[in-house]
Amino acid sequence: MEALDLARWQFGVTTVYHFLFVPLTIGLGVFVAGLQTAWHRTGKEHYLTLTKFFGKLFLINFAMGVVTGIVQEFQFGMNWSEYSVFVGDVFGAPLALEALLAFFLESTFLGLWIFGWDRLPKRVHLACLWIAVIGSNLSAYFILAANAWMKHPVGYEVVDGKARMTDLWAVLTNSTALAQVPHVVGASFVVAGVFVLAVSGYRILKDRDAKGLLPRKADFATPEERSRKNPDMWRTSLRGALVMTAIAGVVVAGSGDLSGQLLREQQPMKLAAAEGLRQDTAGAPFSPVPGVEIPYLLSLLAAHDPNAVVQGVDDIQERFEAQFGPGDYTPNLPVVFWSFRVMIMLGSAAIGLSVLGLWLTRGRGRRARNVPTWFAKACVLALPLPVLAMIAGWLLSEIGRQPWTVAGELLTAASVSPGVTTTEIAISLALFTVLYGLLALAEAGLILRHVKAGPEVTAPDSDSDSDKTVLIPRQLQAESRPTLMY
Image (cartoon, rainbow, N blue to C red; front, side):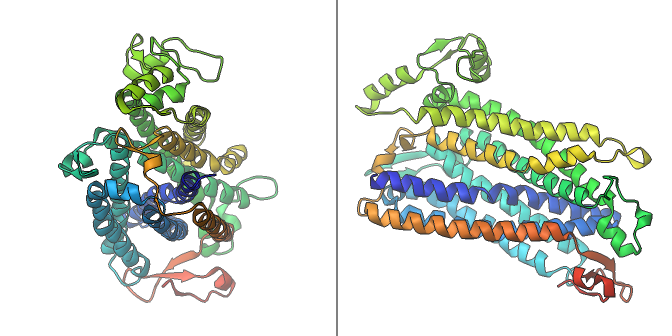
């Protein structure tokens, strides 16, 4: 295996691993902010309990995302120096905005939120969290704008073999970015929504009695126990996650439709590879699985015209050879073909589960329907679906662009660092893989322990009229010895 292949494997492994945390951070932060807003507006204690419970899960995931994301930047100079030289002038602006504006905004106000529970006024404390989650979404925008430029470069010129930016606004408002940002961010909310569904479903199942019935509030001895094991609390978080997932699903579908139209114009090879279409075809069919075709559907999806021409892999290859010279301009067809279908199938299953759940748990007040046991189990089992769908979507997006790192400008083979050896990349790949495996175990252990333990009980501090809250740690609840949360 050559240095180029190992460098691609290393970047792929580290990126996929980092991508496990980014979507959850984006969506879960907004969900937690929504819970705290509900507590601020209503004063209902179970919203505060849920805020702190899911807030801790959010912080665990955020910390892991920061740690794994740092490695991405190291690799640009370590394995992809030629790529860095070519795109540096263009990428400098959006990445600087991401680091100096979005990330510092996010990390600074998140720190204020963490340590400001009993120090800041309620409104200020809540505003800190909203500013932090806005920062995380801004960060995603700038990163995705840079990534979109690789697929559809705009606002630049090539001088002395380097891309130099001529129009920052064109880079930030790239049509590919405007379609890609809502698609990825919407999918992130689906990931976070299903995560909350899985956690809520698990807690509902755990808090049921041996007969599988919901416990009654009167069965609990103390107000603190009623707060911690109140089944209505977990129904609240589950319902909120169902709404978020369903709405995000609409955004994902709409932006996905727009992305498909842009693929036909800007990345025809990726579209052809995703469909296994070999020749230019008018009224191109769509194949859900090999051997099964739905006439005209691909043309309808790609151009909103059932008779539109969709370019095929073989014909595009010939045109690229005439334009760019001899070479193989075809991506890995099986990977692109199946990743597209895995993305759609698993993503649709997660969104469909949310729509079903909204129907099953409909109603308010006395008419509110309890969460069926089988549906709670389905929520737990659905946890990996949107994560795998997002990974498949990333594979479709990045492998489908090959053999280019910058479409039409820079080949992947010309992007790798010339001085790095196969042995050096192999060693770093092995080290990163082992390190990330250990981090994965730590992350899973922390999250599982927190979810199994359940929320800590909060109660108002009767000795003060301030906005402070008192936390009763689980190990001290029986003795009723309250301590400050932070």
